[in-house]
Length: 347
Length: 112
Image 1 (cartoon, chains in turn green, brown):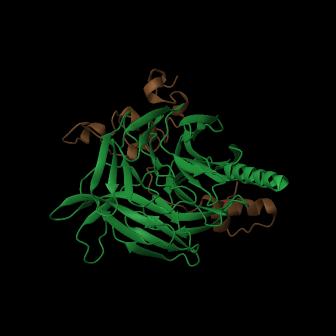
Image 2 (cartoon, each protein chain N blue to C red):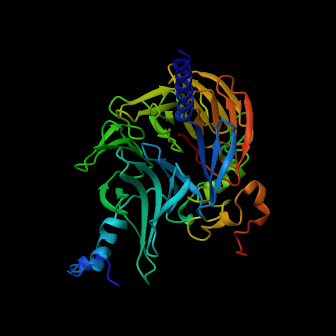
Image 3 (cartoon, each protein chain N blue to C red):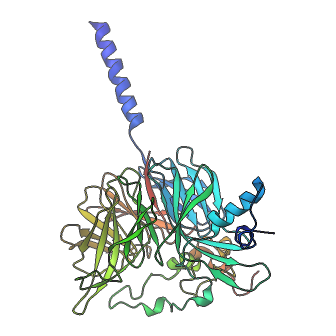
């Protein structure tokens, strides 16, 4: 009997310790000028600084399993292994004669490719003439380390998004919202923004900044837009369901300046930032709460997976932590340098 | 050196591995991608932070404007006020990693 009890206690102990090991810890990846900084969300402090590149990071993407983090400068992409937090590869796209500026990057649903929207300016040797190439989206094979396909695309695409349940299509965001068929290269407009659909009374202009969600989350992206019609001006949030590719709009009751926004884990709220942190009811679009930015403008925002904390920033060299319920400031995490991107990764 | 574009123009075909690599780099590498970003600061006509007022505090967009500085230099968003991060001064962040702290180091008119 004693032996059985001892065995049961040991088994329980093992289960508890294993469940403890399996429990995910949450980290904010904040790539700043010349270093990737990693914040442990249980301590709300920087726990690692990796001075692995000499660049300013303008956007970021991650593999669907969260094991790879792609920090994108204007001309290069830096690949980090999120298990070891080491730089494992660098893709330099510009050459002496081709200047490639990366606009947006998405990782394919199988993690094998990057889809990149970028601008290319070519220069001919010894000839003072620049050639701006026509708009395309390219597929970059990560194993072969080369671009394997390019697709014609509408002008001014600033956002590329994969669809989890539909690996054959991409959503492209430019003057309007498009769907690109990766098999045929066919592009179809799925929502009018600056070019209104038939019957659409307002013209919409979208703001696109740091729209990443987190690996394994609900997959809803919220993008602030500003609208104008003959009778009214307003703002709202374009919701992209990256699971299905479905689009919807949440019309805002108030106008806020917002660079980026995130949907809370329970899908009830939108948190948007610029010079304020604003909490919006996702059903009604009404403002629930707002607070003025503690340290100044934020360009990125992340919500902890339990929905309890909001990380606003960086834009300068800090991230502010707020209580998600009350929007009360919990603290400010200083960073080593300026940044504009943050991504929450659980591991 | 022949590259993919002019190889094709002149009716040349890559016969060995090295030549094929050149062809691929041009055709599939950097030949066709996407516009949308400015090709230099002189092509940008955005005005500045001061022209984005709002009727209540904080007045203006991006406050303080230093918060907006580093990010806007890359694509030349406010060309009159930020370093030309596209053509003339792409590595300015090495002088000035955090503008609010390091602004005294910044000299983008005359390079030190």
